Length: 562
Image (cartoon, rainbow, N blue to C red; front, side):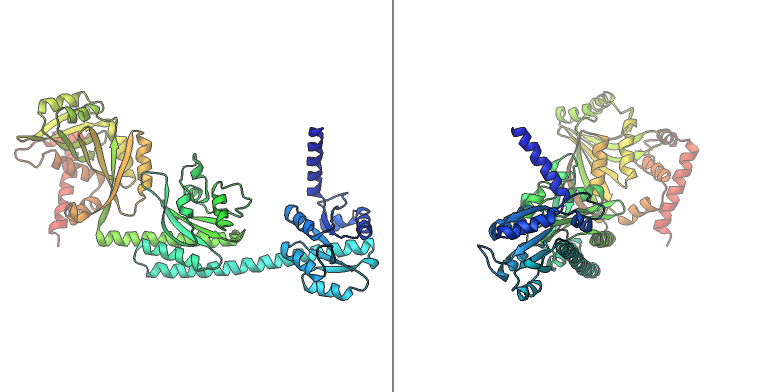
């Protein structure tokens, strides 16, 4: 019996979804029965209201005798039209109409007595679509009146939505213009982001706005600026860009990951973005837009905007938001490039790697020594590493190197009392080195000390540090990101010399010059001959000599040319 009742209920609900839904609010049993009979006798109403969608269906009619029960039905069910008697046991006169009209946007046709035509006219002025005198109602008149009421209400709703959408679009365009002006006048990225959030929150259409960026070395999105009615929302939510985590499937994380605007139209019903919609709805945010801030291959973060209205971000508004996101991204790029020119700063990313050159890592513990790799030079077939070892004997060091996978050769270059310099050849490290170099980075330094192997990657300021971190982690799963810092080039040496090396020399010329310098070619007596350097680079001695002479000429021209 239970299964039968459940199936019948589901079939009834499915049928109700297809048929026209009429709510009759009438306490007179005779009048209610007459209206129901008129509607049940015809399929014409459904054909007029929904041509082509409904065939052979008469309307579904719900009948309520009291205003209280009628309001509950309106709140719980989809209703296409309300037929309303103004005089009910718990409400009388035009106040009945006003109560129903305020509770729902459903079109209303008022039912009046013979002597109440003036009331009917006033009812239209108060929000009813039409009125009918009960004693004059015929089936054809009832169907025509309901059809016209539904159509007029639809047209009014469409016009209102178009007007609201145009107002929203104009408002958003004004905001976009103000943000563009802020781009011109702001000096720092932090100031720009705060002004963007402030301008959006100033608008009555938006309750809250914030900008977030992905933390270097993690997938977590952290706020950098916010404005509006926040109520602890950012403290409660967790946002990441990992699509495999629940925290990465929200609007902000998805926008950053896909580089596409993400919209939640209604926090009350949209199941797409759990659990953010529940927390947003609790604060009165009914719709949300997450706008990625992207310039070329640089993902700066995401702009999130919240409105107290549902469907506040339709397609035209979304197009404007895309332009705003582009403006912000271009502005951030310009600010960072300007700062890079003025401050000549670079970004350093520090990493720890677990399972690389393990005998040397163990040596740093057993001998309490420090091994520093100060320069890495990429040859055609191998990576040349130049560095120094302190507080360890050469024999012990060479023995550890020979037991280390990935190092094919070693030469001791210079010797001092407690320190010596060396050259290592490491073919297996080339892939990681090339990955870093290809994406604009440089391994500035690597240190083996106290049982840890750490290395520092240097990037021009403004590059996407998160992308570099992810690339390195993809190459080696035993790498741990440790820290990020900004360093002025003036702290690292002469900026003019660095500029010559980076801008004037080809990769092969720079490799020849660096290998010659760190390999002791310029020392006296020489630690390496031209033939040894050429062999390390995998080129002929004549080719090495050509690269070296060209690099020397360019370098000296930069120094003495003017």
